[in-house]
Image (cartoon, rainbow, N blue to C red; front, side, top):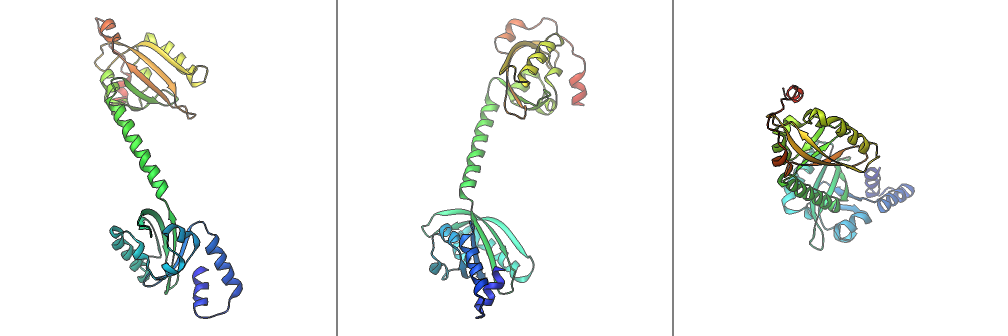
Length: 273
């Protein structure tokens, strides 16, 4: 409707009601809305886009959409617009950078459609904050991953059934199993049978919120069959019933290793095949 109405107004047709509707849509929309000609010149821009770009309506009318594109994104912008005008594509969406009037670079989500042979409509949203937040989350995740991988304690995340979702290098060293071998395995698979009942009881108590956390000294049966004593501390992570556990064999390992290795039943062996 925007393009058809704009074209009619451009031809000098009197469409007062429709023109007012167009103006209301443009001015009240929370996203930037622009109408461009075939060369990319700004013909119409709403208040939201003026806030995004820092340019007034009059200033924008002397510019093209390529002028606002970051230098590194201009070639891609030209290619997409050419594809629109040639009919190769009907529309496109892309995240790219704009350079505001004040010189600051921002990230925007742009959706353009070549609805008319003479005009292009573009909808622009400023996504700078969301991209920065996503970048901060990635950086935090990377830091946590580094902490996880360099921790001397075994750290695991398990689901509500006790199946391992993720573990660090220390847990792999303690159990003797690789991460791939441990994924999907239950803690019951490498817990000594005589300690399993108490472990399951505590696990269920935390799962049902009867206990905020659990702590237990128990025996592990690593891959090599050499039984070791560990201290496991676990707590509930979220409402999806994911659990985190810290496991350490330090101190207890030297004092309480059995002289005779316990050979487990082939539970984990079946998983790892």
